Image (cartoon, rainbow, N blue to C red; front, side):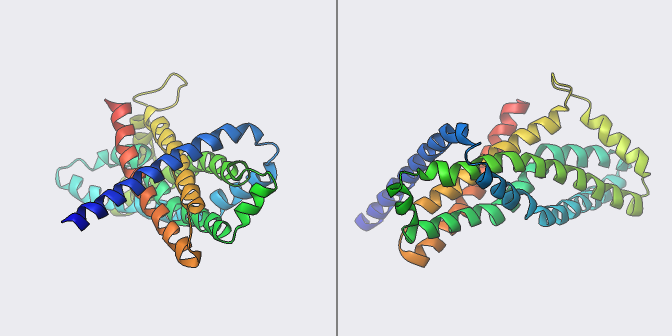
Length: 265
C-alpha cells in the first residue's frame, strides 16, 4: 500500500512539473514571436514541414470522412424520409467539430511527433546545450518557428478539410442517395449562413477555425516541451515522442469540448 501511494505521488508530481514546464515554455516562446522576421528562414521551413507535407494525408482523410458521414447518416435519414437534411448535418458537423478534430489528430501524429523526436534528439546529443553556450535561446531558435507555423497552417488545413469533406459527402449523396449536387451544396451554404458573426463569417466555420488555431498551438507546445525534457538517449527520445502524442490527443479532445461549450452555451 505504501509503495502504491508513493508511486501515485511521484506520478502526480511529475505530471504537475511537466505541465508547469510546458506552460512556461509557451509563455517564453510567445514572447519571442516579435523576432519572427529574424527567424523567417526557419519559419518558412516549418511552414513547409507542417503545412505541405501532411497535405496528402489530410486530403484523403477529409474525403473519406465526408463520404462515411454521408453514407451512414444518409441511410438512417432515408428511413425517416429526411435525407435532404444530410447536407446540413455534414456541413455543420465538419465545420464545427470533425474538421478541426480530424486535422488536429493527423497533425499530432505526423507533425507533433516529429517535433518531439527532432528536439529530443538535439537534447540528448547536447546540441541544445551548445546553443545555450552560444547565447542562442532554444525557445526563440527552435520552439517559436514551430509554434507560429502550426498556429498558421492548422486553420488553413482545417478549412481544406471542411471543403474536401463536404465535397466527399456531395459525391456519396449524388451517387448513393440520389440528391442533386446543386441542391446539396445549396443546403450546405444555407445551413452555414443561418448564424453569421460580426465580420459576416458563418459562426460554425469561425468557431472551427478558432479551435484549429488553439489545437495547433497545443500540438507545437506539447511536442516541443516533451522534446526539451527528453533524456536517456534513444530510449528517452522514443519515450518523449510517445508522451507528446498521447498528451496532445487528450488535450485536443478536452480543450475541444470546453471550446464548444464556450461558443455554443
